[in-house]
Length: 82
View 1 (cartoon, rainbow, N blue to C red):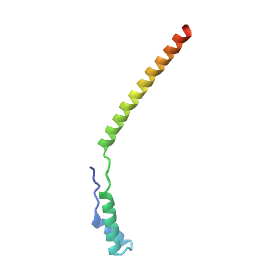
View 2 (tube, one colour):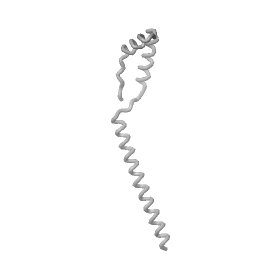
View 3 (cartoon, rainbow, N blue to C red):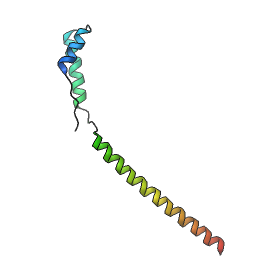
């Protein structure tokens, strides 16, 4: 699982410098850190693997549809010839 680096001390200082009281700044920082830790992030490797799998599945469907169309056209032509 990927993680995001988060400088909580710097974040609290930034909030305090903007006029937010320290206890509220700490609460906000804690809430954000908790929310980030509960997320399951996707890595580039995860995305690459998913795209490859989708590509393989799409290729199978396209080839299958091509065979089906060919069989259908051949069947219709045979029916017309008789």
